Length: 279
Length: 313
Image (cartoon, rainbow over all chains, first blue to last red; front, top):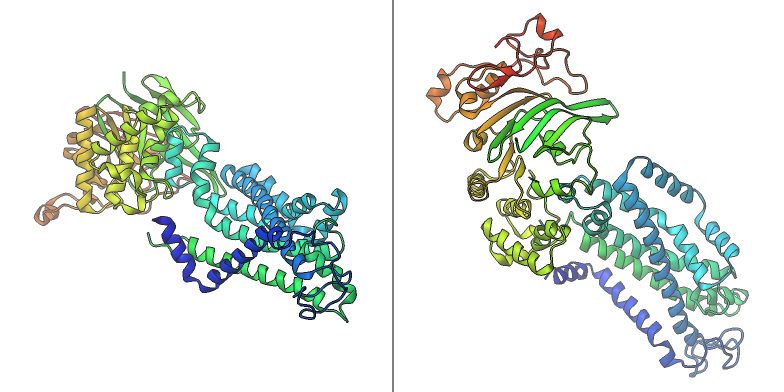
């Protein structure tokens, strides 16, 4: 009943609906990639620099080495989406833990946590990500962790603000009055009420993470064994004057995905915003 | 032995503006099966006193004895026993239930925390909902599907869960429509008759307190002004503040309202950040003298079993 209502509110936002459908298509593409293109996408399969439409075997053409662009895009969706989701999960985990602790306990715990968050915020994000990746090494897991470490601060602030507003509400006092422990109150009582705006933020962090990963790969610091979209853009940059489509195709894929994620974030905001919700 | 004894209880809050003395040396006794009304104007510390008894606010000094055991120094684990004996009903029926929990989950929480089995808990939840007059299918529903009065019943069911001896009612009907108020008050009285539970009934609504309370304690600026039997207080209030408070309450009969003596208080409630020295009421008292500015009066017998904190009654 409540779930149906939620979907209805989400779907009322047309942009969000389109975004969700497109993301679903991308996700399906990523899931079914090995079915459509069983061959390793990084293998050379044809002539180099075939323009899209030039050869019917390669609808999106081939890159400078003669690899199938379409296969790389479809396989790249896997890496790109996974990086986005996991990096957002890492950021949400850190952000919610820090924000909930700071907001619930307050006092010096709050002071320390928020000063730490500010410390992270003062470092330029991209440079921070690059530094961590260079130190830890260019593997997929490290890139995910690096993006998570950079992106948790807004989530922590949002969670803290929600906890500050909720911790003195009477239902929380009622839980304290029956002797409930702090952890149980935080995780079982306050968190479900604090989560909606955090979910919105997390969906936007997915989009941000994809952009970070693209930037890292573009600069040549990505995982060399993974064909992410950012890496395709980076690989094509030497030929941008002659064969610009090599950069443009994965670039458009990134743009559409990020746009869709932002639209979904907007839709979630509309659907979850308690102010629009009738009592 | 009293069910609840307060001995010189103090509650202070540190704020940016200074120390707020919300409760400033309150001593009070509540007998088994008794309903004690705690009245006073907004900001006098009556709700804070209720929360102090539940250990929801830090206690700065004094003793809070529940069946003879001082709970003030106990930590959370040691308080388990007391939590079973003393429970609370909150003012705001919209805020006192978790909007994302079903009613069943909210009411079941005390049993879950006490380690009951799932079956026993489910049976108990149904029993509780029946006692407070809600349909048993209420437990699958969410608080927003209920009216204010129904929600307050849910809050009462939750407070009754572990058969407490004492329930602190913090303005339980203030947020309700007048038409629903009587139903909730009657429910509280029925439950008292059935289970022998005692109430500390905190309210600023004198008519409600007059109806439900056996004894009444009047609070002013964190201290008690007068304590006595309900009829005693209503018929012959001794403390000048009690007189003013009762005179300010509206009376339904206009002819009676015109003839009754009127004591109109001057000035504002002093800030609890900087309470007046001596008697806290001297700045607004119609019978104040120099002694009141220097010496703080203590509660002393004034006849009829009542106690009042005033030098001149």
